Image (cartoon, rainbow, N blue to C red; front, side):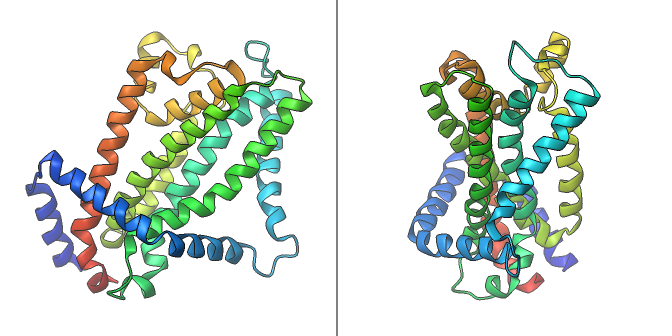
Length: 288
């Protein structure tokens, strides 16, 4: 296994394909995903059902988990730390708008890292396209995200906050997040087959990212130089985008330079993830 990984590592580090090669790999991935769309949906449905098999409450747990998380954080920060409303926005609403995208992002990344190992019996079959496995995790995570959004909408109504057509803009930011998560998932799931420490590293990085990303705190609390550094995190674009859609009612084109930066990072991650997965995929059966 060590010899195989070192050989692939040398190949990855010493081969710098042109951008067109990376984009061709990405397009071939997307074409394959379209052709296998029914299989992806079927596997995602099966994974959702498997999570709650034997459970009395079943899918109700998808509602219980976000409610418990939001309640605990609201109690700690609003009651314990006495967090004040931000710009006349109740803290629980502001918090939920930031938690919703982070929860699905972290769920996709953590779940996709081990997804090749978890489906090794399928990956060993030459007719199975392992590229679709991260998409299976993404689709199954969308169910919990939908519950999170329903909770957020219920809080907005309960707090008698104004309704807006900008709510629909959250769909754009969800698409942005899924594209970023897909590229990262391809990369991490492939690398984790050869380096099992990747899964442990991802757990640590997600914990750090949870507190570094402005989910519980306002980025304006930081000095301008620190804000500039924190905004390099592409997930901040998504977190702020959800708040702009549900709370601030600001269009995504109001910050064009940051939008361009985000898509440059995301497309680069997609192309890199597709290329790394394609290069390492032939060795999966030998290692597994």
